[in-house]
Structures are given as C-alpha cells and as structure tokens.
Amino acid sequence: MTLTCKAAIGTGNGSFIIDEIQVNQPVDSEVMVEIRAASLCHTDYDSLNWGYPLVLGHEGAGIVTAIGPEVRQVKEGDHVILNWATACGNCFQCQLGNLHICENNSPVIAGVDSPGQARKGGTRWKNKHIPRSFNIGTLSQFTLVQESAVVKNPYNDMLFESASVISCGVMTGFGSVVNAAKVTAGASVVVLGTGGVGLNVIQGARISQAAKIIAVDISLARLDMAARFGATDCILADKSDAQLLRCSEQVKSMTDGRGADYAFECTAVPALGAAPLAMIRNAGMAVQVSGIEQQVTIDMELFEWDKTYINPLYGMCNAQNDFPKLVSLYRSGQLMLDEMVTTRYALEQLQQAFDDMISGKNAKGVILFK
Image 1 (cartoon, one colour):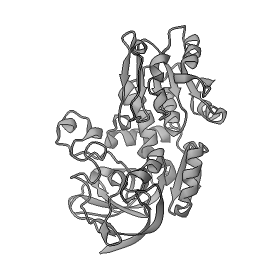
Image 2 (cartoon, helix red, strand yellow):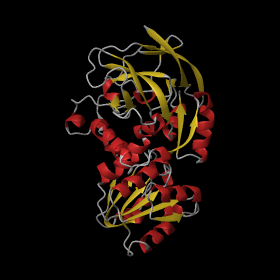
Image 3 (cartoon, helix red, strand yellow):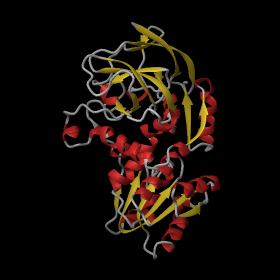
Image 4 (tube, one colour):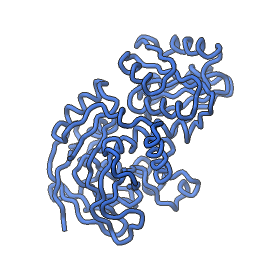
C-alpha cells in the first residue's frame, strides 16, 4: 500500500515547493518513520542548489509506523532519531570502525542513492522516483529509510524537537570534541563561530571538563548564548581581522602566551579555514568542523611546530553508540538540547525558517509536523 504525504521538495535550482509525495510500504530492512520534528542546518539550504529534485532535510525524530521483515532493532511505535551516516558494516572503512565514512552507503562518500539505502521507487514524486537528502529526507511527514538510519530513543517523554537536533548539529559539534579531538580535562579550547554546531563544540568541551573555553564570534547575541552553553570567555571578533590573526593574539594572552590546546573552526567561512592553526600552541590541535570544501591557502608557518590539523566528518559518529550517550547526557542535565531549539515552525513556514537561519537568528530552528 502506498502512503501519500506532504514534503518539502528542493527543485534543484535554488528553490523549493511544498507538495505531495508517495511513500511505499517498507520491504526487507526498511523502516517507515512518521517524522514529528525536523531541525534545520545550512546544508539543507545548500541542498537547494544541488541540481536535481530531492526531498529536503537530514535531521529529524519521529515514530516508527511500519517495518520490513528483516528489521530487528526497532518495532512499530518506537520513538527514533534519524541518522544520515548509515553503514554497511562490511566495507574497508566499516571494518576499521569508521562507520560514518562507509564506502558503500555514505551519501557523502558514495553519493545520493547509495547502494544500501531504501530502494529506488520507494519514494516517488510526480510518478517518478525522487531521492531523499542524505538518504533520509526528514522534511516530510513520512520517510522510508534503512534500519541503520534509525536509532531507538527509549524515552518517549522526550520532546521530538529536542531529539531531532541530535541528528547532525549536536552530533557533529559534540563528536568533534569527544570522538575526534579527544579533548582532555583541564585543557584550553577555542571555538570559532558559535552557531548551532559551535554551541555543541562548547558543550562537548564543557562536559569534557576543559578548564578554559574561549568563544569567538562577530555577534554579541551569539556570544551571550555561548556563555550560557558553557564558554568561560568570549571574544567579539572584527570582520576586518583577516584570518582572525589579531584575535589569535588575544587568545594567546588568555592562555599563558602559548595559544590554546585545541581550536575548532565552526564558521563555514573558507577564509577562516586556517584560522584555528593561529590559535593553538605548539603541538596543539586544530579541528575544521564546519565542512569547508573550497580551496584554502595556508601559510605553512602556522603549522610550526608539531601542530595537528584534522577534518572529521559528522563528529566521527557511531550513531548506535553515540546517540544513546547524548540522550543520557541530556537526561542527566549535562547536555542542553531544549535550549538549542530557538524557534518552531510549520512545514508551510519553511521559507521563514530558512531566512531566520541565514540571518543568524536561531541556534536551531525546527519544523514541527504535529
């Protein structure tokens, strides 16, 4: 039986429409999820220009409404959080434990409609197969995904909007600190850019018991929010400060003249791709979190001496392990998720949600379906 529902469709030319799609019942290891909340990030906006129609959205939470006969980890009625970095479990990277960069299923590595995802024809628009953003397409009332794309949330009383932000923004920021950089207790940390991802870098550093967490942004409002999420110090940056070199001198003065132990770039501004290298001490670690893909020119003197620069994807996510940890931290009061959700919107208000995100109004805007 085919289900008809509303979804946000990116047309591929920079725009989107709200229209009806058809979603087939699950087969094999597929799971149908009724999406209750879908949070937004800048990648959703970028996907409007990917050049082909697709169901938008890659962060979400909802309820399982049907499962294929091979599904073992979830059942109908389970509350779940969506995970876009699904793994085959068998490829070279999966065998190394790098499930987030699976060579067969990752929409980043293998491309959209990667082999292990929901079958072609499982989701249709205007009588043709339509891909789903990152193979999940959460800006839809219902979505059809592989079992590996859902993680059971045992706490049915958790707000769907709070659960939805875990899917990408929280996982990327927190995981970059805990899984990738492995920030140690007592360390000094600099966070460049305090949007949704940057705030979760701050949270990861706070929970890792970093002694000094320096937030850097060009917005006072965002710095105020950074302080609420755990920043111990704030620096208001100047747009005219090329590569934040003047700002780096302030950081050094706040860290015994050496520079911080760790610095995280969360701005997505290509010109700032090398900026964290100027913030860290010799043998410190710079982390490029925001996913800059443009060419970046780097003065190699910034690498002196023994500095490390890493570019992790999705906080090196292992969703079946990491999502429950994040929920547990939330339940214990250590991880702020309710506070991440700045504004809630109906699906029909998606344009306003995008506008608010681009203007920097929200830490996280969330589309609610019920």
